[in-house]
Image (cartoon, rainbow, N blue to C red; front, side, top):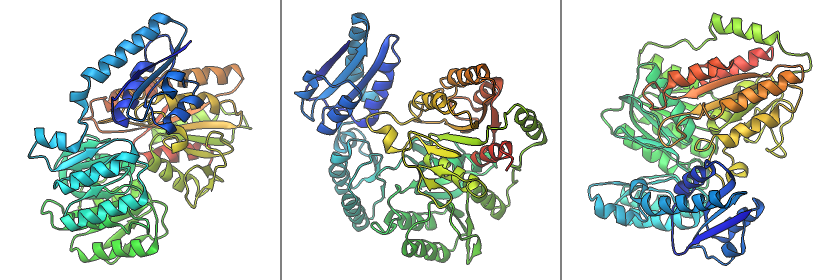
Length: 504
């Protein structure tokens, strides 16, 4: 049965609503549950999920709607009771309704983190800037003209706008949004991607280096329509920061004019710099700027410049032996790799490495892969960013709710040509408390189904995190290894392992 409850004139931001939805779906006996603001677009989503009711149809966009499907009246009552508790008592721990409200309670704060529906986010960000606050705009779906207006206003006021759609930053050692526990140090990062920045921070930490600041820009910042305003601002800030010895840029290739402005700013800043334009064509050293085509390569170039002890990410002899053993289990028709990513930039790095030698499709626009017609269905070799809007509209991001990605595993093994599945597991702040543990049952089920059909399905996993992250990096890798998953030290290494399994 389907039932709903509307909490009138009640607002909560999108991140809280996603977390609440995940908590309600975890209740035993719940078939489906969503918590959303009752906007017209969200009503359409609920209708598509089979969760729209007449009660929600009559609600307005300032009302909060809870809808659930279950066969038990008791379970439905439990869902509504838990939803009410989360709404009433979870608020203070989670955040504030406005930046002004937060500033009153914390007058010394100088950054506002805004995570509300995109149509309201720009106005709230503008109020924060006018109040003298730097802004981290986690919200997405902000109009490009609003982003430009906000960043121009920030420039006038000598402030910084990170975002929209900025998921990762670290300022003065404080981790913001999706981030990992890493050591402080002399490398300053300006990143146009969240998981790309996280991967760089984590690999630097594992090589004994640390972060002065990591400034996020949002993915649109270096497009011609914005002109790299935040990227250039971040470079200027790190140039003037005495703790920063080297600047690392993580982004994707974009408008040539914007790239030139970034290069000119770096070349003139007086500090060495490394630029990773993922899959870009520029390599080697140009002026004082060193270029890299993958995140792993970029970090190793940083390590070389700062004369730190560089780790070797070549596939170990032990792993080579495991690869040979597992390859022998595959049938001749198993020729394809499927990579199921929660991190979009990690997926992009996989496209760069796989696409050099294999025909490849992806829902990421990148030169090394053809664009998928429909990301919900894979063909041949495929890299899928499951954080894409087509998967997350009205649903939590897979870094918050990995089960959404795990369900895709069972779909992929229906294709008898699939040999290996690659997956990332992002740990740290803001994400799921055990992304590996909730995925392992699906891995085991996939292995069981494949064996019943006379074949094996191989898995390669990479846990993005440090040994200081609360989820426990070593424990998660051990869990994966215990169920036959080949584990890697970097995302790039995981992709190389998959490529070697395929004979590449």
